[in-house]
Length: 248
Length: 117
Image (cartoon, rainbow over all chains, first blue to last red; front, top):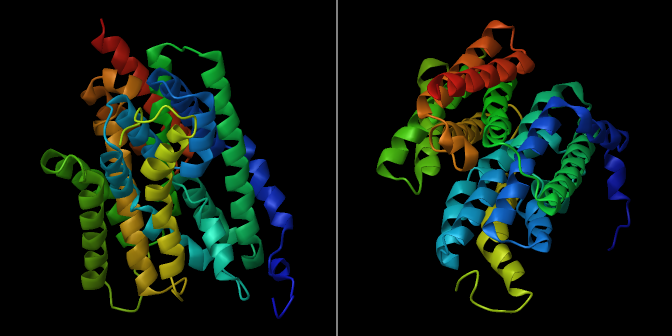
């Protein structure tokens, strides 16, 4: 390295801890509940504890986990599972692209963004976007890392404990836990949205996803989601004057 | 190549990496590398946000309309009403997340009780 400037000094690391203490917040509890179900599911599927502990933090996306476990249960071939997981994960790209400009500072290196992007998940994404306006720019990346890394450690341990205990809960209880996730996602994204087009995108994706599932069951999220996003932006472009965000 | 193809201890980890980790991770890295100099208030970023939001909404709908596991045992009508009612309460309560979530859960349990009578 020619210039040994301490690149970590461009961030305000005191925000790392403030992200981490969100462990005791609503989003954290909801995420935990989802990973309780995953621990049980992995055991039923015949995965080993080591495989579960490997998979939870490295994949770090609940839909991908569910598709992988379902694929293993169905004894699907590797390329088929990889394709299904890949199609369901395309959302990670626009999610990351929306997050990076918010957490980036003058002096951020691209490897910082690569590292941070590895931790992008719906929960951490929504939570950080919602909190970012109240966090000084230099504290945003540390806040995101603090939140996401703590979540990662705690959910991995929790899913492992559930697996180890072979904890069996009544199906209705599990269903209730699992149902927290979609309601939380929908409400928190609504709350984070600022522009009409974003509200529209949320509604259109919710409607077009299931409709697409009738015709393209394997790629419904991708097709319904991309269509909904494009239509929402098109609406924004037609209704509002270009170059001016149409704030609700 | 299947999950059970090889009897080696390392094979499941390779399988999980190839079938689950990489297909998820590449999109995050692609996003981080392709973002370039998108401005926080630019039109391009708004488009990207619309795409991300709509894709996540499609994931939410998947949870409600085509779930797996214990949730799939609950009738679709109950799931859909619980989600919509919860969201309506969230909006009416001045966007309080906790009220939306609690009322959605209440309708879910109530619906299960009513339909299993």
